[in-house]
Image (cartoon, rainbow, N blue to C red; front, side, top):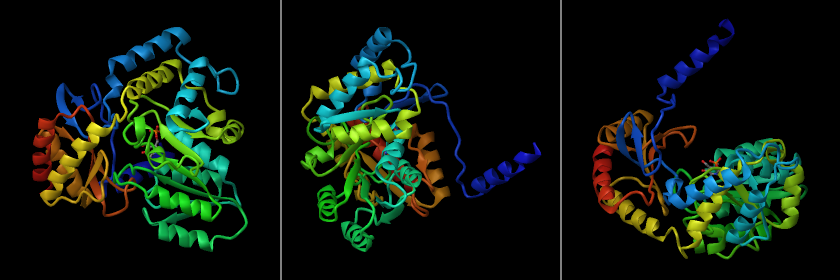
Amino acid sequence: MKSEQWIEQELEGLRRESLERRLTVYGRAGGKIEIGGRTFLNFSSNDYLGLSHHPEVIRASRRYLEGHGCGATASRLVTGTLPPHEELESRLAHLKGYGTALVFGSGFLANAGLIASLAGRNDHVFADKLAHASIIDGAALSRANLKRFRHNDPEHLESLLRQCPASGRRLIVTESVFSMDGDIAPLAEIAALAVGYDAMTMIDEAHATGVFGPGGSGLIRHHGLEDRVNVSMGTLSKALGGYGGFVACSASLRNLLVNRARSFIYTTGLPPSVVGSAIGALGVIEKSQNPGAELLDRAAVFRKKLQEEGLDVSNSQSQIIPVVIGDNAKTLAAAERLKSRGILAVAIRPPTVPEGTSRLRLSLTLDHGAEELEWAAREIVEACR
Ligand SMILES: Cc1ncc(COP(=O)(O)O)c(C=O)c1O
């Protein structure tokens, strides 16, 4: 159609820059993945604890499906709040050490609705330069004045806070474990700045939940910052192996979200089976005092091996280990070579990461055995040379 001619030109531009993305259909996902009948060791899954196929999680999901039906059938404020939603929110609040929790359709929707509810046109949002797209889109939706501080740099954050006009609310937003770099934010320093400059703080624990902190509660609890951080955001879609997002916060903040967060209000509640799988996953992690310990130990060994061979793993301190290559085409070539050797490590390119920092983002899961990791480390070093 003539009116769509611009689309092919746009896509051609992406192809020229090695930036076009395409969907691939995978067989069973997780630490091992199938493509066209062949099994690959998968370093691109966020199923950190291998819970997406855990028998207890599947059983729980089935129980809630059979007990409560396929769908919530309405938005949460209409008739879409069912006993499973209430149960999950109370379990999440308990895990996170906050008074209450509220479940959203996804982590993206949680961030979008939350930030736009806490800040408005005359307010100020301070976000880390590498914050996830959902945080940036939430800030854009809020129409607040968005200021980006240098990655994990509290001094820069402080200088922005100092220059900020006295009028309007202030909200500081960052991730505890960064999704593309696997490094960790200086949460205690950021929370102290928030108190000193009368700002609210919201921490995205998407990649810390289930892995870090006592009982997998995340890094806010690990540092004992529940009283200083206003909102702990998380997702059910990574270490918990399912789908959905949530925030843990005070009762009044939750009330505000129920009344203001458009991404909560104007969408159907999560289906009972999805809520059930999250409850099942919480049941599994609650059995361990430190469910992420083994994974983090394996990640430390793996990271050291790559570093010793001269690869740039940035400041990774978690189960997420980037191998920064820089050039888009070279990163794609490394990913292709690994694929030919039976390893799936998806190339991450701009705009997901800043220009010139294309990388293989390796995420380790408990489905990766020690021998497999040794072999994979050798192959990754070869592919990146
Ligand atoms: C830091 C961060 N926040 C939020 C999200 C969105 O979570 P979800 O996948 O549940 O929408 C992601 C997912 O990629 C993420 O990495």
